[in-house]
Image (cartoon, rainbow, N blue to C red; front, side, top):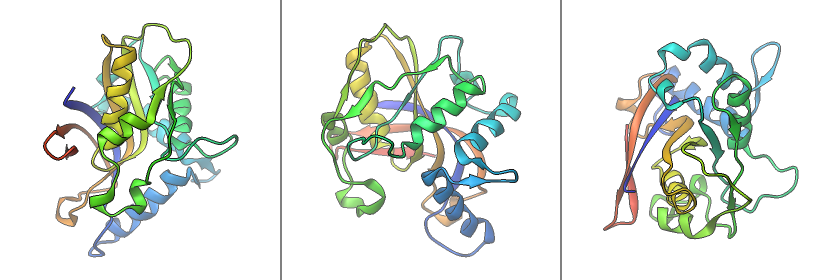
Length: 216
């Protein structure tokens, strides 16, 4: 697999201060990353995301990803998972299932070896798709799954998502895989339109560089 289709609900721009929307987008990204409480009465960001998706389901460009047998698989953290630690992709996946998106959450991907955190690494040192693949394992007694959505909180280049997809395909070679991120990075301020900007895109692997290109 050299390409993976994905959907994303929100967008944020990590640089530039030319609009209030761009500045707010970075705050929203932090809310997503920490599953912070928002709105009044307060709800976790994961719950807000699932509620918005349910409310606007018919207009979501990635609504067709969700079939009658769709299983949601949260992507692992870069570090080893510790008891009671915050695992935002899992919270998002659980909230989505509670709101009718997917049949269940399958926590089968685990990080066996910690790797560098993407958000704190310079671009040239960010973990590659191959590094993600090599540090992730599929665990548990699993049934044959046919329709799987990989769930993440933030997608940048798509390295984690594609490396995880490779590992899942080892366990489920006939599965249909797509990805879903709560928020995507829009690096160029001129390409940023708004925080709420649901899209379907494509993550493409470049074998010569062991990296990914993401569009949008």
